[in-house]
Amino acid sequence: MINAPPARVTAFADSLLRADTVAVSFVSVRDAFLETKPFAGTHRVRLWAEPDVSGKSRVTIEAVYRPREDPSRTMRDLERASPPGSAGEQRAQLLLAALKEKLGVTTY
Image (tube, rainbow, N blue to C red):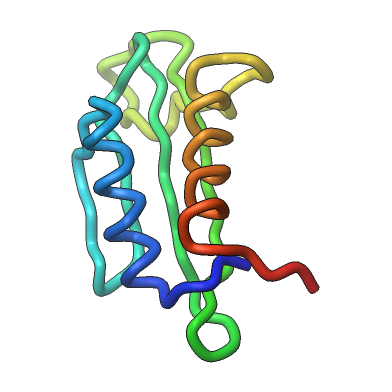
């Protein structure tokens, strides 16, 4: 549980990723959703921030990659969870750690 409303979490995650030179392909502060462009080959990170108790957010960060290209299928059909230790998983862990450090965390 991050100690900030969803819009603030999303905006802060966007600024953290851009400062770390990870390009963001889509961000919606209103919907509290963010998706990066591919980095380190075919890895991507997605973030959702859902409202919980007043002023706090439940954050989900997903790290995915595409093991191959197939023009007959949509990009998302080919995605798999990033393996442990991969660039995508490491970026997701760093992002969550930075959100916890800068915005604070509450554990229930």
